[in-house]
Image (cartoon, rainbow, N blue to C red; front, side):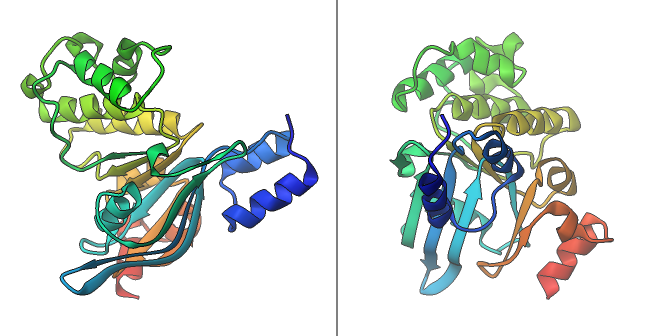
Length: 260
């Protein structure tokens, strides 16, 4: 059911900034927009030095890439948003129905661990129970979505590095989170596993906010519907991938922003 005009105005006041292509399509159809991740004054300090300072960001449903040089603050920002490190500022997840906090945020670190003693399907079921997910979607379907049906009853500890990453990605997808944060999910994977991860994230972005921290050109190409570039913990670019690249290749564009 479309929101009344004053509802749309209030929505725009809350999220600020521009809508993603997915949200723009919803607005055109008169449908309520999907979830939005909103950051206000988020700051993180380590050993007395400020490593993240983000005044305001609003990120709507769709795929967003967070990039920048090593040490630019990508991981620290994701961990602050997920509530895993202490920081200042406010993090909100809002949508057209109600407001949500960090319980609506799912996070996968670069080297996920903790469930290696379980089989793939057991790990997914554990994630569902732990996060209060409904059991309407069978765990096996999440396993199938990441291409591990043949390994569904294998212990995660016995899988290859790429398969382990996919198994943990299945546990992330099984959570009822409106926002998914992933830190370098394709680093160290072979070509087939990188492709599988990207395909899963693109699919998830149709209804969720998906923020992927990465510096790999192929990830930027496939997942960079929107690009946010960090330099010394601050946002120095926020826009489309086409505007980010300009007439350069990805390496040239990244170097330009890192040195500017």
